Image 1 (cartoon, rainbow, N blue to C red):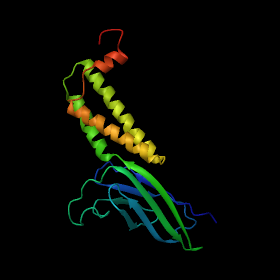
Image 2: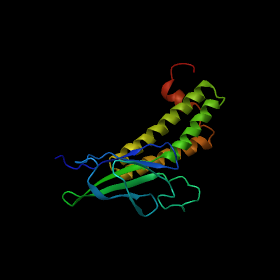
Image 3: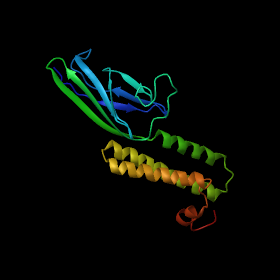
Image 4: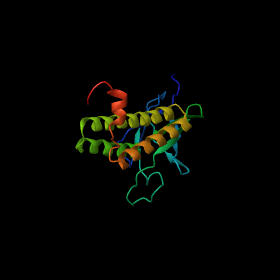
Length: 196
C-alpha cells in the first residue's frame, strides 16, 4: 500500500481579498482514510489561525474566514508578507499524525500597485528615452518582487522581506516621481553610442 504523502499548494487567486490553498497530497486510499485534518495559517502581524481543512479540496480564505474581520462585514485585503502554513492529518489506518509545512510570501497588494504604475506608463506622454527608462525601472522592481517570492519559497524569510521592502520602496518612488523618468539611467547604461 502506498504511503501517505502530504502536500499543499497555494494557488494564485489574483485578488488582494483571497488566499487559495489546494490539497496536493497522495493518499493511500480513495477517499482518504484520514481525520482531524486542519490547516494552521500564520498571517503577518496576526496570531496563528487553525481551521478545519477538507482533504482533496481547494479552499479559498478571506479576511472573515481567517478571523481578521467579522463574518457578515465586507472582506478586507489580506496583508502582504510571509505566511507560514501547516497542514496536519491523522491517518486512521495506523493512527499516526502527519504534517507538511510551507512558507510563502503574498505580494498581491504590491502587485496591484505595480499593475497600476505599469498601466499609467502606457498612458503617459513621454519621449522615447523617458519611456524606456520607466520600463527599465519597472523591470527592476518586478525582478525584486520575483526575488522575494523565490526567497520565501525557499525558506529564506529575511531575504524575502528585504526584497519585498526594496521593491515597495522603489515602486513608491517610481509613482511619487510620476514614473521616475529622467531618461538618464537608460542613456548612461544602454545607449551611450548614439542619439535616442
